[in-house]
Image 1 (cartoon, rainbow, N blue to C red):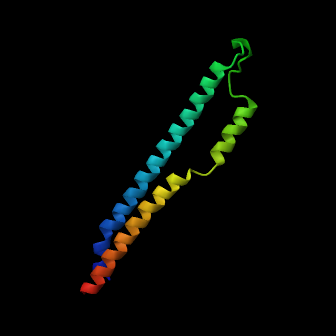
Image 2: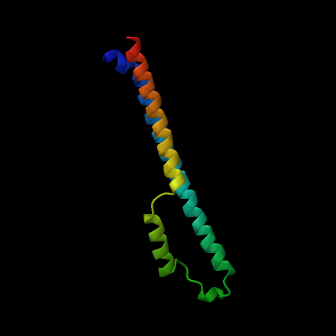
Image 3: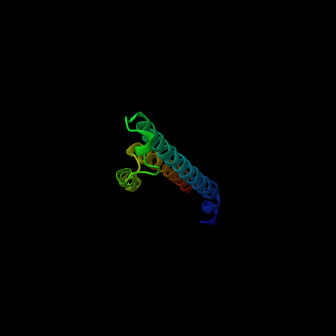
Length: 105
């Protein structure tokens, strides 16, 4: 059993690294989406026919509630599907290696 654990250790380590990388990528994507939303709001404010005196300095209550609602929404289906697919592939490869090892013993 210890032999099997030693063989699987690099794959488990790599799985941990991939999960960390996916988490970092998810954080970068969320930050980019937030930045894009902010820029879209600024662009919309610039296109609005209101004068500068009427423009609020911070977000309006409507914008704040919309941002809070967007923050609580789950991540997009393709992002979740991609992460799940990578994890599933790694698990299947690990299991295939384990089965191959057991059959060769």
